[in-house]
Length: 372
Ligand SMILES: Cc1cc2nc3c(=O)[nH]c(=O)nc-3n(C[C@H](O)[C@H](O)[C@H](O)COP(=O)(O)O)c2cc1C
Image (cartoon, rainbow, N blue to C red; front, side, top):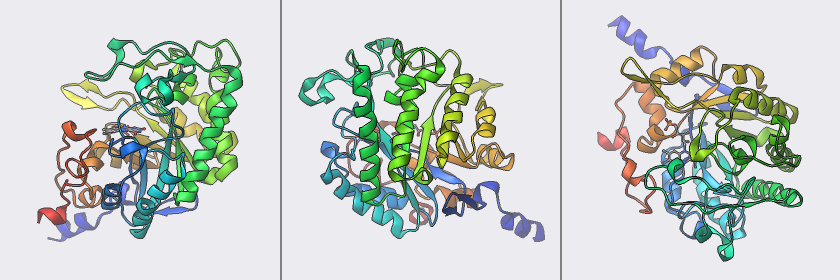
């Protein structure tokens, strides 16, 4: 009996407190950004109030779905933005509801770049990118729309794009967000500049690693100047090849970006693990982020394939400060509670990840309380 009680009382690493800058987080379980395609006309909707507040815990960190910085940012149906006054007003009740539960909410600032087609673009124009290379059909996820050949941005246009991120960050703060996460991962615009599979420029934004990092660094600097580095994070995926965006030297690239981030003193770096690998019949995370974790001076968040056990392990080993969960959080609004109790998890339904229904697959996953 005593042993059972002792085991129950034992605090698991994921549930230990952590101070992220000025934010006192009571646990290490963050909600990863997830596009849900339910923001009709690029405007966040009232149903998102319930979705995000269901997942909010007192002091817990939530990161929103990818949120467009301009009317050229989209590449999926019904994704939200934060470039108009209407969008800012629409985010406000969502942020307020999350704050009412005591959670911390960061807005993921996103530009899809060439992950788009003319149908998503104002006046049917071509999507913009670091390059004019189209994403080859065979590199697209199964069933994905085909994306258009992009227009390569001229050197002179780049300050305007950087400014979109700056203005969007300002808007996010006006909507009440605690901070922003710059989306520098998963093959979107920032990563299209970073990686050599996609960046074939010959100006100062292409070629060497330092040049390819210039755009990301300028975005980080502009956003940090605008809202304060203590409210800025970034997401990176150096080892992934999503949307045909990969690099020949991922670790060197990632270390260079991290050094740049240190110069700007931003709050956190959120990095994705390489894709999971099959080892002895089990899917395993190939942990490759330690050099970047050691080099980065702020909070280090990891994501990609984590469960309760792996999350506890990496926090315990000081490989990460926080662990972000996507699919498990999507299907388990009370994920921190379930981890605390080591309770069974609801299974996620891929079929409703990106559908437009305001309830089904969105706010209808039960919490433990609902189930009992
Ligand atoms: C439905 C869905 C939407 C996603 N949308 C985004 C997004 O908007 N921004 C982003 O950076 N990653 C996005 N991702 C990737 C996740 O944040 C995460 O990196 C990935 O799912 C691996 O983590 P997991 O194993 O915990 O699910 C999405 C993933 C899913 C399943």
